[in-house]
Structure formats: C-alpha cells, structure tokens
Length: 367
Ligand SMILES: C=C(O[C@H]1C=CC=C(C(=O)O)[C@@H]1O)C(=O)O
Image (cartoon, rainbow, N blue to C red):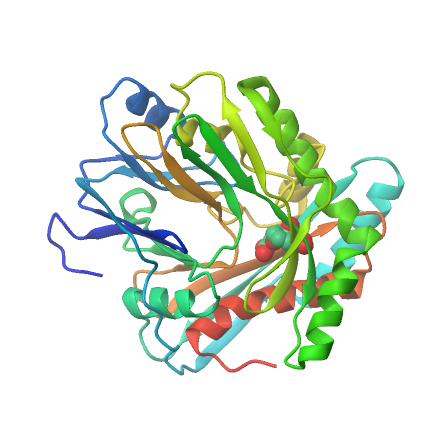
C-alpha cells in the first residue's frame, strides 16, 4: 500500500476470499452517513468506501475515492513481524469488565434488556513503528479466508489514523437485487489440540446459551430485511465457522430486494449495529452500552464499499484496531454478547480470546 502523500494513495482495502477491493485517492470525505447515501443515490458520487460508526450519531469515516479496483484474489498473507509492547492498558481493567457483566446479567433477569454486548478496549504502545501494509498482510494471514481490512480514517478523524482488522462477520453483501448476510454470534475458544478443538466446535453447536445469543441477531436481521425484501431465507439452525482463534455460530441469510435502487450503503445503515455488537432491544442495549463504556467510535460499526450500481460489501467492524498517526500507539477492542445464561468469567475469557486476533497479527507475544 502506498503511504505517500500523493493524491492517489490507497485509502481503503478489503480482502475477502472472493477478492480484494482497493480504493485510491479522495474526491470527497463524509462524516455523515446520510449525506453519503444521498450523494450516492443522486449520482453526485460514483462510489463510497470507509467506515460507519457503532452509534449512528457519531462521525462516519467515508470517502468518495478516485478509483475503485477489484482483484479476483484475496491479499497474499505474510507472517507477522515480531514486536514488543512497551505498554498495554486495559479500559476497563478485567475485573471491572467482569463486574459489568454481572450487572448486565442482573438487568436481563430484571427484564430491562434481553441481550447486551459489552466490550472492552486495550491501548497498546509498541516500540517499533507499525507499517499499515505489513499489518494488513499479517491480518490476512491469520485466518483461512484471508479476511482483512484497512481504512484511512484520517480525512475525517483529523490525523493520519488507520482502522485495520480481520472481521469474520459479513453484515451484508449486495449484488444486483440479491443481499446476503452472515451474522456471527456465539463463541468458543479454539485449541491447538485437534481433538479438543473439534470437541469445542461440537459443544458450541449444541450450547443453548450460544444458540439463544445467536438467535437474537438472526431475528433482528429478519425483522429489518423483511419489509424491504420480496423473499428472505434464513435457516433455523446455525452453522459453525472458525477464525484463527475462535469457533462461532453463523447463519447464511439471503434476501431479494423489492426496490433495486436501495444501495449497499443504505443497507449497512439499515442493519448496523446488529445484536452481534449491540443487543436486544437495540435502543435499550445501546443506552446501557453508552452508560458504561467509553464511546466506541468506529468499533462495532461497519467497514465496506459501495459502487455506482449500489453493489458492495460491508463487514461488522470487530477484531480490529485503530492505529494512531505516530504508528506506535493503537487501541483494540473485544466484546461479547451477554444473555441470561452467561457466566461472568467465561465472558471475560472470551474477550481475551478475541483480542488474540489483533495481538497475533501485531506479533505481540501474549498468554
Ligand atoms: C462483539 C464481538 O464479536 C461478536 C461477533 C461474534 C461473536 C460474538 C459473541 O459470541 O459474543 C459477538 O457477538 C467482538 O469480537 O468484539
């Protein structure tokens, strides 16, 4: 990736198993998702790439690029560069996160909310500078699908920051009038031992706690998609999919849009944030999250692209980090869905396992 200051430098890369989308140059920047949607639908802009925030009231980091290219292959992965963390500071500390989970389980028992996704952040300072290109290729190497993204968020955040990650979760992909989604929710840590790894996947597939946690996301997507679709298919039993570190429950959803003028960005705004990152009911869960967490910014939103035909793909912004302009400081996040059957220590451990995606790609040794 070019990091020169030229007008045509790369501003967006999304690597997926079916190909890599790259955007170069910046004609316009948008902090308001609604303004970007309007510009796309009137033909004022030819494409949009970037990130929308978790909280729709926060700033998006969207641009109209000069060039949008599609390669038929995912990124070529490279092994992570070994690095040392000068400091790692958790926000909140693990004990406080666990206490928040205890409080959330009580709110569920009291009928305040059915599911809420609580997240924690870790601020890391690294001795050696982190090059965006290297980290992106290492993120692509951490999973068999070569999922990875890098978004230049400097134009809207006000410095030369990048949002990078390796999200397994497709919020939506739109081609013509066909929309597919693959929500992920419900998790089990993977094991280096093959037998234990397989057993963890099998236990996840039949875990009533994880199946309930997953169902909230599928039901939400059905409710949001049904009014705009002429047909909608969502299997009642999820499949089990893996990242490098975690097994997840996932459901492939397919819908046909009634109105062909609805764009992939319109759908991202309609669907995000799902209960995979927020909760059920959405408004109550979002308020509970706002009450206890630091503002999430772009974590928990969506990263993706939309072309002039309205087609595109948006990933849920998880397993990600925001790299500061100094290239030494970054923030990463991990969250987990809390439901009635959640166990506070298991939920804390799950966030630790999820943080490993970013730590592994950074080449930082961790327990
Ligand atoms: C919120 C995150 O993961 C979501 C996606 C998959 C599984 C999840 C879970 O099992 O809790 C979360 O809903 C995250 O990685 O920060």
